[in-house]
Length: 405
Image (cartoon, rainbow, N blue to C red; front, top):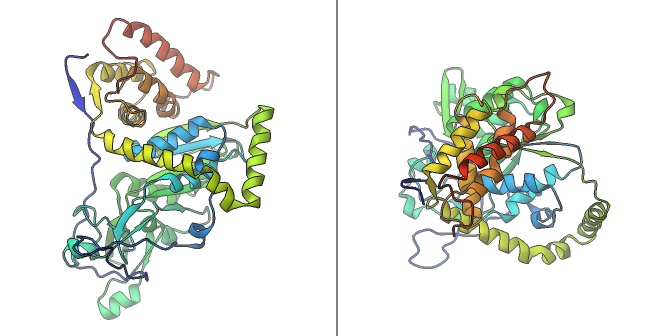
């Protein structure tokens, strides 16, 4: 065992500056107390939209694309990874997997009638309405699915950020604000299909909000801020356009997927899709035991995450790997560490091992390598070569390879 170790860093929650801003309430059914004496009145939330009411293909029924599925699950375990970019051919279950993820995530509790789904138990990261409301212990709450919000390519900046009613503000002195997609994605996932075709000005807005966890809307000298802490998920076909380097580096992980070539697997994919389309409820019922098992595993991994230890030898290995690959900046090390922590927690381990680093190295670093137009070597191959080289040196160190449950 290493002579010294450190514990996993806790996720930082953005602070929103309180003010007396009055925001419009979102229509919602009133929550009823679940039992007398309870601190929070809870109720099961109704579907927020037609998409929520439609049956979703089960996550555990998706065949292949293990790299993408693991990257999604790791982000669910540790939000500090900060998103995933999925690049690959059309029709390879990118959108299906991302929308299916919400179905296996543990439900969240949020303040009733709050358009930002503020958590009732945390004073930090609340919107102005919840900050100035009655004591949080008495706030009515709902329990619902983690939001997965789609950002259409044709969306405007107002649709993304929200709109201010300037006329009402000038005539009545009130800040009337209509929340946008960033508000709906708070505490959830913001999904952008064909992210490489997204307009530049929307990319800038996303970068600002994703970095600070706060969305600030300013119009005609009037400003309003609200929490916008979300996990950014993007997908696209690299043949249709390059992604801006500023946005590429903000995705914690990048998964590359390809069309499955195995004949038997392709047949099974078609069979499962046909069975789902003919009887969605019955198909989902068949996979519900596997869904529950995965959901319980995610809950356990989240609970274990803050107790996973990071040996000094693991930190040294990660730093050497990034130096060997000539990775710019330190975001690569930080992301690789957070992903290794999530992988260790998901696998039930008490400390990060070499297996965890190896499992997430390509996901964490392939999009951070310097591009040489004369070098045709795949980024994944470079990372595997560097791993093999450093693993030989690690034979004489105390970095654990095996299971540490």
